[in-house]
Amino acid sequence: MLPLQGINITDRRDRMVFARLSERQCQQLHEASLRILERTGVRLYLQEALDLLKRAGAEIFDGNRVRIPARLVEQALDTAPKRVVLYDRNGHPTIFLEGHRSYYGPGSDLLNIIDHRTGQRRRPVLQDVKEGITLCDALPNIDFVMSLFLPSDVNQIVADRYQMEVMLNYTTKPIVYVTYDTSGCVDAVEMSEIVAGSAQALYEKPFTACYINVTTGLRHNREALEKLLFMAQKGLPTLYIPVGSGGLTAPMTMAGAMALVNAGALTGLVISQLQRPGTPIIFPGWGGEALDMRTMVEPYAGSDYQGIAESLAHFYGLPVFTLGGASDAKLPDSQAAAEAALTLMLRALSGGQLVHDLGYLESGLCGSLAQLVICDEIVDWIKHALTEVDISEETLALDLIDQVGPDGQFLESEHTLQHFRERWYPRLFERENYERWQSRGSKTLVQRAAERVEEILANHKPPLLPKDVAARLRAVVDRAAQRYG
Image (cartoon, rainbow, N blue to C red; front, side, top):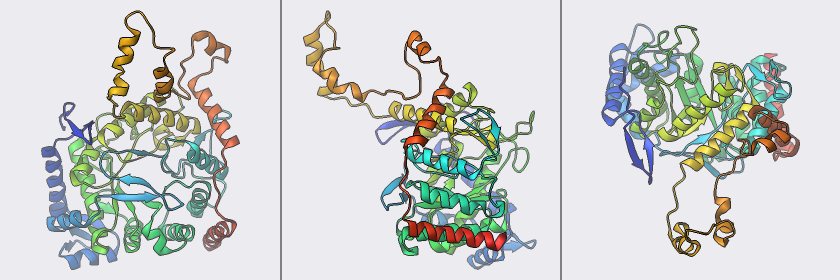
């Protein structure tokens, strides 16, 4: 087991940040991943990817098993961009993936929703996706969007097109999308190009990025590889994320599980750079997880593996996609709030850049818009907690302290009037005295969050696309529905 590194604190960009792993430990994991690639090899279920690696000097054996030499990894690390910028729908640079700044968003494709109006768990519909994206567009600490829910009232084969249509229509924020097959990825890029105005415009100012799930670190499925090569050919940002579950598809130990997942991520990195050097790749920010051997559920908010993958991504200097604000609780309750807060704080401290899955419950099977609003409040708290302290003649206020002296108070001073708005004031967290809280209905945090959701949905109107652009998006969705319906 990797030792705890609780004292591994370093000064980055004028503030303290947490690093779970030392430089030496990152080097150990990197070398272990290289040994996996050179000795064990990985299975690739796409001939085009095999041919690409073979031409570069990799060894192909046992049909589709590849041993990747370390030099190809080092070459890929040299050509992969160390900084990725995501734009908003209007072409403004919005997310800068570098260093230790964190950006936050929800997840995708949840099979269930806790209805904030009724409190009941049910299957989501397309209207839930629309409401979720509208909410994300309004929340000030949500920086990018994902689809949140898998709508059950549309053709499931092409549900990803409906999700993409909603995201492109109902927010201007950057989008991370998931597609069920390669054709869905192609359609999502076409839809993004329609909104951008052209393929070149999207390439120059990408506001969407494809999240590719990979079977395991050692088994790379055909569709994942097809998407990777397609996105690399386009030169568009890609998140290539192998799955590793300790005790099932990876060793139970954190070090072994992380090394295996990292080997899979490096495989995707090599393939993308062979296809098109300079392709923007966003590295996985989790790994080392394991099944809970008591329940056989893989937790979303476990403690022991937190921060490991972020340390490794920063060791490489690559942009990182990570997970926070999620819970294994079944309802938006005290466990959900605690796990969301803990994971979000760890992400911020360890430099998780693109943090997704805010609002997730039930180990990734359910979501709640009320929980998402609570996460937005938690992120706001964290941002203010980690803000650089302004120490100056004005903020020290030594003359004022001398003027007021030991026997006065500062409530009526002009200085207080000028600066009181600089302090953090919550929207959801309760600060009233007991009597005022009681007079307002003794509402719980979840009740207040549900009311906040309704308030936003009633009043926030996201800027919709022009009608002609929206019609072209609908044509892509209809075409897919006819093809697979």
